Image (cartoon, rainbow, N blue to C red; front, side, top):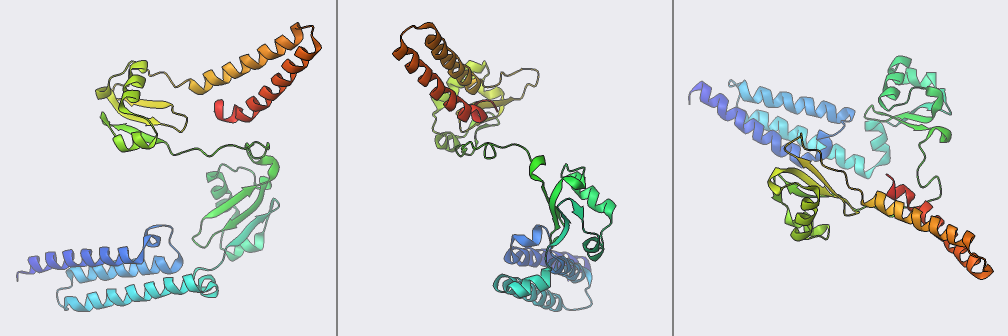
Length: 286
């Protein structure tokens, strides 16, 4: 066999073996790497490159070496799953870097981090003052996660005591001008409904790049022609305005009537509707 052809065959065989081993090791090998996974990835990659071009040695030796590293890595991962002590020893533990707004300098030195590096990582998470951080840790993979103090956290419906219904997955119903029937059916709508919504927007199907339907049944459209301005869905805003109008009408009726019973009834209905509006406001005004 010519030397160039042998190199081609070795390279293809090495790439195939590397692909198979990586698939068997699982998705952790392509996510944030631990220390051991980092070493394993470099070593197996080096063996693969060596196997491709070193024609002086038999190819089976390289495959045996790759297989041994694969079995070692698989065994280590299995051990990490089964044993907390082994997992802590191999991957190490998370280290607290900030607690109650105070930077723990000793832990920074332990992790060989400088204050500048810590502040840089905080800025990447849109945190510009260390004093605002309640708790920050460096994970075994080197990533720094931080929790802001309560007073600096964004306001959410939960913090206001408002219960919000779970939102369903947004479905992509048109791609490249083609209707996707399965996502459309999953969202609970038909082709006729979709064509009607497109007519309301004044756009044709063949000019639609992507169209998506959210859990509220609102259709969002992106067109090929960027010069055409597509109006944004107004269903939720319209509903919110109608509810506010009804609440205002009930309050007006309560003020305009002279009958005590009717005044009380309109007042109670207005108060109940206002409570519903306040609960629905985060959903209708976002």
